[in-house]
Length: 212
Ligand code: ADP
Image (cartoon, rainbow, N blue to C red; front, side, top):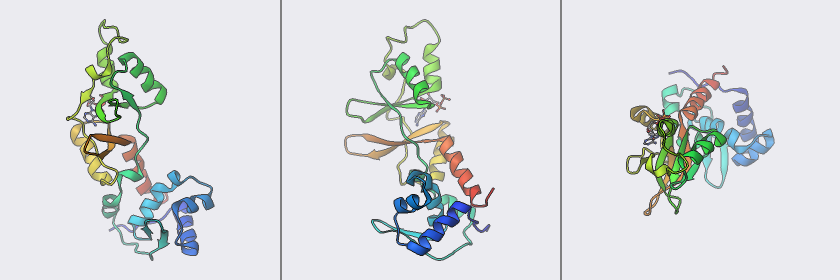
C-alpha cells in the first residue's frame, strides 16, 4: 500500500475546500484562476483518495485525510468522464477525401461517423483512410460509410465506466480510441472520445500525486 501524496495544486484545492466548503468545482477553479476542466483530474483524485466528498448540487467538502489508499484502489476509482476528450464526428455521406482533410484539421487520430439523427454508425481510423487511398479510386467519390468499421462492431464506453476497464477494452480490441456514449432506445449518442492519450494522462496524474 503506497500512500497518496498530493501535488501543490491538490494541496491548494484541499486548503480552499477546508476553508470554504461546501464549494463547487467551478468556484474552486475561479479561486485558482483555472478552468473547471483543468481541475477535473485533481478533483477526481482527491475524491477517490478520500480527502474530499462530493455531493450533487452542493459541492465539495473536506472529508478528512485517509492517506493509506493504494495506487490500485485509486486507479479503480478513476472514471471515463474525468479524462475523456471532445469527440470529432462526421456524416456517413462525407467523402473519404474530405474525411482525410477533416482528420488533419481537427488533429485527431479517429473520426466517429454518425447518421442524420446524430447516432453513432461507424469509426474511421488513420489506417482505414490510408488503406482506401492506396490505388486509383477517386477519393472524392467514395463516401466514408463504405470504408468505416460499422455498428454493431464498435467498441464504446459510458461516462461512468471505470477508466481502467475502458483502458483494458482498448488493449483487448487493439484500437486507439472509443466513443463515449449515452445509450438511448434509438441509438448511441456520442458525448466524448476516450483515447490512449487520455489513459496516458490519467497515468501521469497518478504519478503527479507523488510530485514527480
Ligand atoms: P489505426 O488503424 O490508425 O492504427 P486503430 O488501431 O484505432 O487505428 O484502428 C484499427 C481498426 O479498428 C480500424 O479498422 C478501425 O476502424 C477499427 N476501430 C477503431 N476504433 C474502433 C472502435 N472503437 N470500435 C471498433 N473498431 C474500431
